[in-house]
Image (cartoon, rainbow, N blue to C red):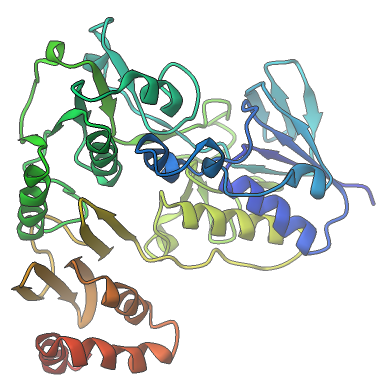
Length: 400
């Protein structure tokens, strides 16, 4: 029986879908619709390109022509304008309309740019989600040089990596956010204060908890305040949506034959706590599950704990699980010594969230312990306890 699967998008979720389909014996047609003419981009690498740490080729992690390798018919350079989940058809702006048996929406997300950052027409406004175009990384790199002034809006993980990249190019940088501290959704206030000190030591001006900022003094503005799913081509009367296209843990929507994966997808609330959204690795797991299930498997999306593990200005920072500027748990352990910081929050007898500064050797172990995904977790915890006895004492008190 000759079947046809259509994949919308060209990111990590899309490519994992393709590879999972073929790896699980799917030998029918695969068509990929995308408005891009580039290979699969990993957007988390864009700041490394801006900083000069990698070249343009380093932005594309999949080697070779994967579409050709896996027998995919590519429809590129034209965006999808309509998905009819009842008729099971996809149509793009080039007037290509095609029916499908199964479809995976991997359309990703677009950066949010608040209107006030567009009113100064002579100031270039950028986001860190694309390579080319008027607000892409290539154009930003052309615009920056030592002595230029940049405003980075959004003290998020993406924002701080942009700040570091610009400082490495000699740019004078101001970082602003309406929240009172950096990393408002990933760092406790105490941890954030230590990070802020390090940022300022590297010549960055901080404007936190502020409203309007005079934009006329800057040469470029980089906005890192979040993204919104690309799903304007979907009829919301046909497909359940919320903050994204709603799917179950098998990546199935409410319509037969229609799946979604990656940044455009939102796992329904009954299972969403098990999968961290907005991560490159999560998008790939979601795509892999969708492709496998169309090929006849019964594969749930791999569980991924919400985590951010990164390095900037010589600081190793890890945020694992759910943590905020305040304390929402039942019990807290905190340790600060010699430039290192650890905060662990428990709720209902389980670890709820972790913050670490300059303790990279234990972040993976603690993440594994939270997942309890292998017996090795308990053995590995001994390494943590040997190096940091106060953490062992904290765990012993709670019998974790």
